[in-house]
Length: 415
Image (cartoon, rainbow, N blue to C red; front, top):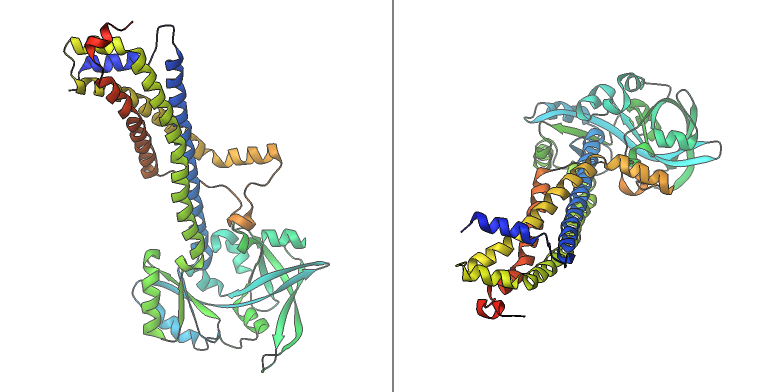
């Protein structure tokens, strides 16, 4: 069925050599339209994949695989639970933390913050925090002196650096829960970290666990426990089993729940953007249909001659389907190359656009991170390319059917 002469004729029909060259122009436009649609879809999907990967990496880097929290916010026997948890299978490390909210002030600058107390030795085992802070900065969190590490954005907003002193304002309550006058404490900035996520760089204050216990008035208790498993995928079920075994009263939150709404919204947006951008390819497919109809009208006598020489209807259909396939494949290949390049250079392109327009395209307050990541997946490229070729073929079905219905006797004698 796939005869060489059909391929030869199909490629020749894409190049109109008579006075009507408009069909050739439409063919080029159709290829470019498909290429632009494919490239846009690949770039958008790659950026969304990059966002998901980077946000996940930062979450796992700063927040561990799961946390276990007591109902009343105060875990007194945390040492026993840490020891028992470390003995469990699939558990790499367990570390306590102390957490509270407050405000950092310096001069007229006031910013709300989250204060977290950690044990540096254990914290290295449950998170990748050292990769953001550096070993020397993390070791600077010594007991006493209220040493602290703060995010880069927070340091810039307060106008402070290493060695500066700021005031921490903490809320205070009596035994009945009534609000009292706030408490004040002087803390020393021993280091500045940069994670790339707004919630950490603009709000987080890290202190030694014992200093945080004293400031937050937790006594010898912890606010909760961080847990790291051998496999992050095991965290959702593993932390629940661990909590039931260690203390049924402990509540659990795994890493997939930290920003559950974000991940769900991202998945929904990926599906919606795929559909919307496929419509761009569909518009180019309409151009293919228009082009094929023009070619059929122009080549009626040629089709009649082919039929007279013995070509069957299915050969005529195949002839025009090949033209649609050539346009679809050419557009898909060109779009894939452009899309792969655009995904690779997405951050540089975003910075160039920001500099040219004078706007901030990647606002960390909105997008969690302050840069534009991209992660090109082979499966996305194959799906987009296949969809574009399929649409091109579908657009050619009707013109091919019309060509196959040409009556040779009438066409030859047509003026």
